[in-house]
Image (cartoon, rainbow, N blue to C red; front, side, top):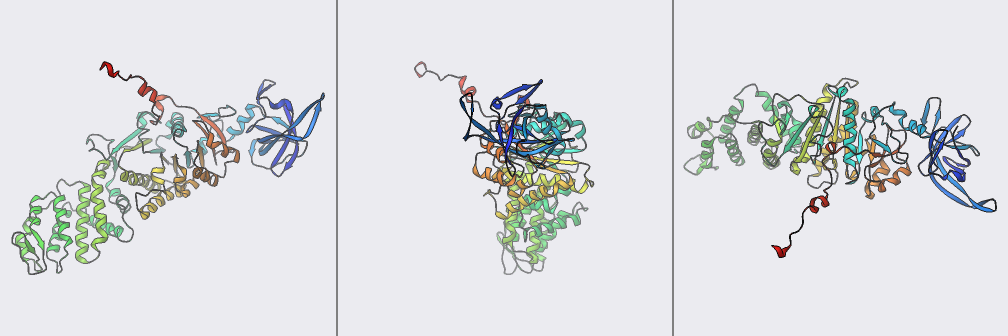
Length: 602
């Protein structure tokens, strides 16, 4: 038995009108030892249709001024409530969806709290995975973690709305409850643009690896967390180099492919790079046609290979198309090779690769390859020169954040990559490199169906997934977005899942947002953001959508494929030592403790 509150007086499609008893306007009622919520907006009622209980949500109420009922000589307006069916109870419990509709004079009843909880916990299988309480009902509800973490997740909200706390709470509870089962089977990678998760957040230190990347200072050689490790075969990869240096498709990618092919062909010979440099110097000096650009390229090679004698020698050489001569700062052109063998070759033969790291080797190889291509007439110097400039300008930053080594450290369940101290150019490139690093390795080794998973968590995702960026070319921006779109569209079948958190969802590629399955939506007030939410999330009802601009801090609308119904929950605040480092500055605390000295007292 329950508390009867009214009856159906009209049915217009899926809109049902109830006539409500006047005594049911109380906020809370108790009956037979159970607690009930009164009739109000976003509360739940049941309408009895035969032996079935049709569950409805209250969407509006009004007084019918055209009908007046008198009671003891006192006029009473008729209270009417508009409800929408959302599901029904049968022998198996709650089933979501409109299968049955009520008819006129069917009775409406309040739902006890336990039965409301059963609606939202039906898919959670009795889970204790709780991150907060339902806002209106104040019921602690378990989330369906099996379906939630087996999907792409979006967490959106303006600055100060509690978005970071929700992200941290979600994964903190996951690691607290599931860490022993996760270890060895799943990996979680956080791309942290603001350095919010580098402390004791999310997981215990023993299960967490933090990379504190910085382009502003030289890394400590002894610090294992100062540079992200890459295997040599991954660094010397066409996709990796094209990504790092934003190579164009038609000319610069084929050029890089020739660099990589040449390296792989002779990499078993330890002295192959030095021998290659010597042969290209001879070819440049003895070519039948002078290529002026090759002289500057050779000077760069000599400088990178730390050969001071060759640098000094090349300073005194200028190309000239007349008969070969080499007198002081004269011209040199030697088609028969005799002058080269006598005056230049002895110094060139001192070239070696001792002390060159992988980044210096890359610059040497791209310069030598360009010398070779210019001599053969394969390329125009103007087409490849921008790539060389990007390689040289990026070298200092990449050397500080990447470690190309044969022996890679053992990976822990949680990896946090902090980009807080990286420059803007590096922040655009590295997240894509890391995403492809995990995606490609996982895709090539995972079984079918997947027996392992990778979970990529991108906080402040508008930094890398934005369509509004003007700091890069359109071609590179399209390439970057296409790569992430591929991961989010195809990753699920390989067991790779993405969590995207952002304060500006409208800036993110609509393709990416449309591929997300479940959402935690905090306060959003911008019209573009709200329009995107309206047109992307099919599971969001009109009433819940209307709450978004006015949500309090920490409160969010939860909806998606893992949930039968949208919920509005107040996320529990994490303890201070577990909170992400994103708190607002307390000016009262910052300024209130000191007094301005009196100028008259000095």
